[in-house]
Image 1 (cartoon, rainbow, N blue to C red):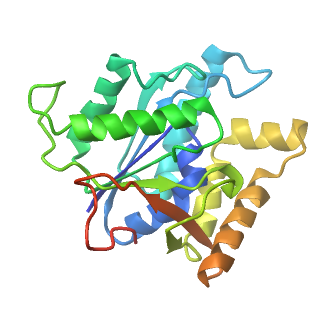
Image 2: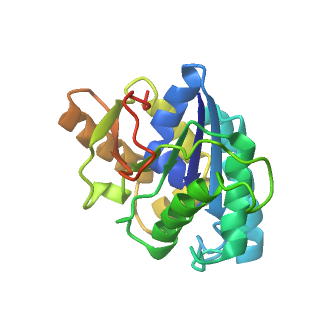
Length: 234
């Protein structure tokens, strides 16, 4: 299968579904990652222009750890992600048409900040529009791909419908997050937050819910014609 995960900021996918993506890749599936925002506002000291470049490199390195075949950057500045921006939607459509995914993973409609929520809306729109022959660029994708919503930060207001056992890929998930050094180091040194422990704790909690050591939780987008009878998560 081809798996396309579309997150907002360069580290969001690693946090929300990195273990699942690594498991997909380890099982021989083709994994592609895409971030809509460039992460340029994610630091109080590093200026946006410099940070954007740093985070692009960090995302590539994290993708290598996950086993992704390619990491796409839609390059929208932080805090201005807009689901009604036709140019942004068309860029995401191009990515979908290039990958032609069997499954797409993105943000929940109830995530904690506007950029995340709007990214999920863009993906919902673009994944349908990618099947419309006379709209946008690239060869039409004949499948309106099944859509899964990954966990919210800290799992707040998110009750999973499906779980993925990531016990064997947790360390790779954490290693991928560590590649986002500009974020992990800043939070540890200046905010007193051990983000790797934060993520491990959420994964442990989801594991307790589902009877394994570590897990990631997902919800299904229940819109026609995306629903399938087979299990698509690994």
